[in-house]
Amino acid sequence: MLDNYIVYLNFITEKLNKFFERQKPFIFCKKGCAMCCKNAQFPYSKLEVDYLLFGYEKLDIKIKEQIMKNIENIKKEKSKFKGNDIFKYDCPFLINNECIIYEYRGIVCRTFGLISKGENGKIKIPFCAFQGYNYANVLDKNENKISAKKLEELKIKEEPVAFNINYKFLTNPDFERGFNISFKEKKALIEWFI
Image 1 (cartoon, one colour):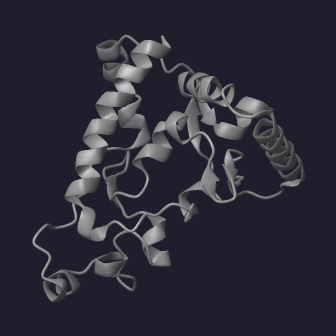
Image 2: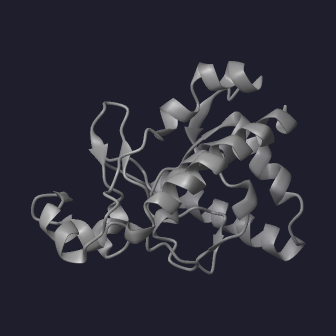
Image 3: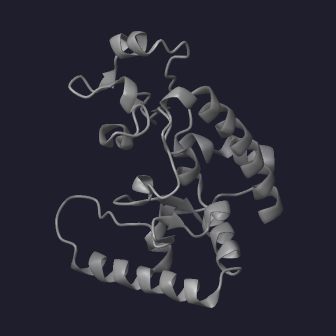
C-alpha cells in the first residue's frame, strides 16, 4: 500500500510544485519559519501516519527520543486543556523549527501556504499572510482579501489563485480508487499517539 501511496504523493507533489511556482511572487516560505507547524491540529489519515512512521524509523535514536518527549508533552497539555475551542499544538516532529520528517510529512503539510478553496467553497488565505509571509504583499488585512491596488502597484502579472487543495478533496474516494490506496480513518495527528 505504501508503494501506491508514494505514487499518489508524487502525483500531488508535482501538481503542488506547479501551483507554488505559479504563485511565486506571493510565496515567502523559507526554511526555519515553521509557522505552519505550530498551533494547529494537523489532520492525518492512517495511511499518512503509516508513511510518517516509515520515515520516523530511519531517524537517529536521539531525534526519536526528542520526538517522543514532544509527544508526551503535548499529551500532558491536552489532558489539562479545558474549553470549547479545538486543542491546538506544535507538531511533535518539529525540532528547532525544522520538520524532521519533511520527506514523509502529511498532505496538509504539503499544501499549506497557497490560497485554497475550503470544503465549503470559500476562499482561504493562509494565516501566515497576516504575519507577513505568503500573499502578505498583496493582502488587505482590513478587508481580509487580496488587494487589486497592491497587485497593480507591484506590477505583478500573475494574480493570486485559489486552488482546490483542501484536505477532504485530496483524500477523497476518487483518489483512493485511482491510486489503489485507502486513507482509512482520519483524525488529528496527536490522536494517533494517545
